[in-house]
Length: 197
Image 1 (cartoon, rainbow, N blue to C red):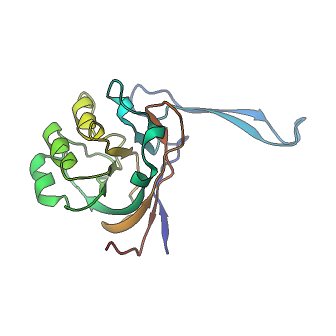
Image 2 (tube, rainbow, N blue to C red; image 1 turned 90 degrees about the vertical axis):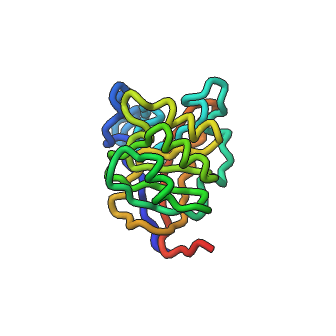
Image 3 (spheres, rainbow, N blue to C red; image 1 turned 180 degrees about the vertical axis):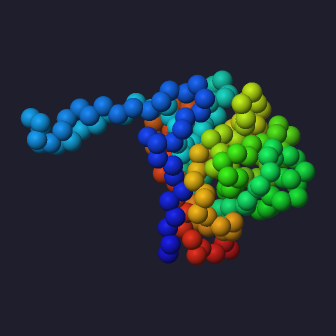
């Protein structure tokens, strides 16, 4: 089985405009009056590859640790979208049916129009993923996110799909367990040579 790491490095990925830059404090260093290395990390939970929970955009929505874990493990399909924004027409024409997990390879620059997000959310997805830093765009984040998050569909953003061909895979992308927060980093991996039955 071939594994493909589709995660971005939290410390090296550009942050969404306005989000805080990640930083690391070296608390202890071997040989400097210490027997171990110890680091402290400061980062927005939406930096790099991460999962959005309903609480991110929905008042009273559930937090990232309340997602069922099975959303993040299972067959998925990667499709390539070369033009932005994603419209409802494109969803109806190009998005596969009968898939629970869908990842969009768009060169890091595609986003959903409001109506397209509604159309895609109605497909019965458990998870939608993108290699963009967000499924929405600057000035229009709320409605695309709410279309998915209001239905409990996990949103996986900031993927690195540059070395991934469109097709079927097995996804493993559980978020870090951060109780009560609206999002969390994730280590996303695809298993290739997997047949969806």
